[in-house]
Length: 277
Length: 313
Image (tube, rainbow over all chains, first blue to last red):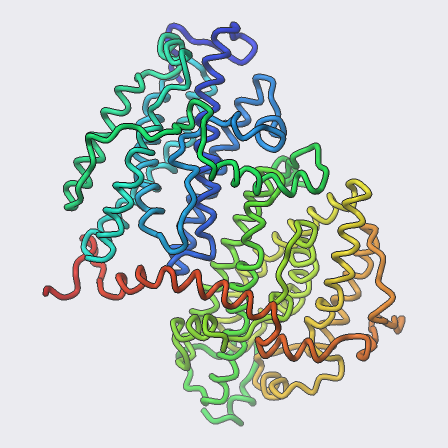
């Protein structure tokens, strides 16, 4: 593994300023993946066919696995799963509002368009992290990249099919119009920490560069299928990255953490380390 | 092959789609497989809310994987059923949606609390494992073959359920009390999983004669109780006073039939219990909402070069 000149080393080597920047990059990775996965699981036992049910379940579990890796990297900086998720305030989360929106029952077009927007953004983000100055980000990025490729293929092949059908095409167009501004929030800044993230080489592309590449790819693919892309849209508010969220997120967080609270838990169970017992 | 010849040849994995089997055999095998496949789907439907409610990331992953496994089992079993040439998968899934498809009694009862999840994932899945292990010797080879993979994955599910039960019973007093309450509510249903003890099941004799079933319900219930009563006690659960279960001391048990609500059981098995209606219509609604996607797929054929419209209009 090649290291960059300004390699930041491991968790213990970080200055306060560096840690703040690494944390900011990791948190959005973890939160985006976790909540995207959480919403994907809505489709388990609800997908159109048994086969599509199995595929979307795979995506959900991949994203959960990635979230687990990123949260673990945050925990190495002195946090816990409890403090990050189960005992946290909903406004501590920094995921894009794209991933927190609920699905209407039966709106498979929303599921696919959202997956597509997210997976293109994830592809670009991971390529901007593969040479990160923070080794843990570099290593985990390369572990994750293989799986994300399949997700993109999955979304694109559904869009190919739906583009050929009048009713499905209309539903896809409606989802594009609705979700595009929310997708742009993926490239919104968390705050002034963005300059440090770029200057320290934690991420090798600026948010504007990532957004431009995303817009170009999305526009070219969807226009090619005959869809209109609202390229003059501005990012939705709330953006999520700034810790401001829709009410849907507050409801989801409440539901997600209800068992933990009702049982009076103070520990989130780890089981995977005990697989061999 | 006529029925007598089928009975004479019956043995583990004896028959495959290459055999010319009597309609009576094919109908009996379809009935079993369809019931089993439906149960996988409805079990998954029952557990799916706990993917979201699971109290840690890793538990969430395990619930998501388990629910996915059940859908995969349904897929395999419907395929094994289709190969009998009596019903298509679509017909079976339609029947399940419209309330004609039958499935396991325990999946007719909605679950509210996380503490109920080991009642399914440990006890019911443990009970199902007993039955499924014997089906590896089914005379319908596609059924037996599907059971190889399914039993392996079900083994993982029972471990998942046991791990949740152990954690809860090692938790706070409040958790222990909640689990005990759930156990008392679920235990009679779990006993009924195997049907009435004096069951002269209308379908059993024929199914046994042609090798579709290799164990009676009484044998399966005894095997389950032998293993699971000690396990329940080991984790600190108290056996409810009723239904009364007499240990014969020789590995067999007598369950006092009058302590169980058989009216409810037969209402459940007719899909007419309140919970049956709730679960079946909940799933039907979800399936109807994506009918447009299936319609679209029916209108298209997929070729190696990508999707193409079936007809140019």
